[in-house]
Image 1: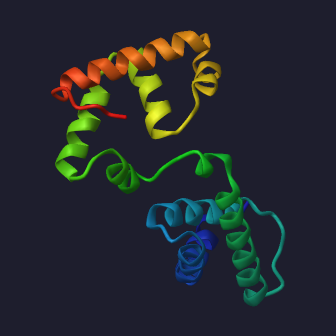
Image 2: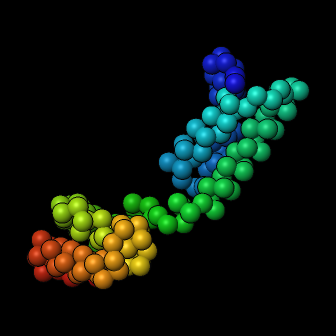
Length: 160
């Protein structure tokens, strides 16, 4: 494990390089920050010795590229939708989006979970049943009732 001084020096020296590589691959500031932290955590935990600064820099670049590739292939990333895309999918204007999101968040937990997983995370009813530990027909009932509650809260607008 590396010392705090070594870690701080490496961050000062290579932060721009790591962030640029992340942005090139991920095109997202928040994802870049996540990978940046992971890369330097791996650096701190790495017990091997570097021959020189160039070897250290090459190691960090390789770790950064691999971390970006792993993130892009990850199950988590393939099953989520960025918040700005949700706004586009759920409503025409930010005010509508805010209203829909508030209505979803105001649902009782059992309905909120099912509605969120179905409409925002794009899970099927069968997958939601597995995640929540409920029967598939129960999930369909939760979705139907949750949708009706949302319809009432939003003034009769159909959410899809």
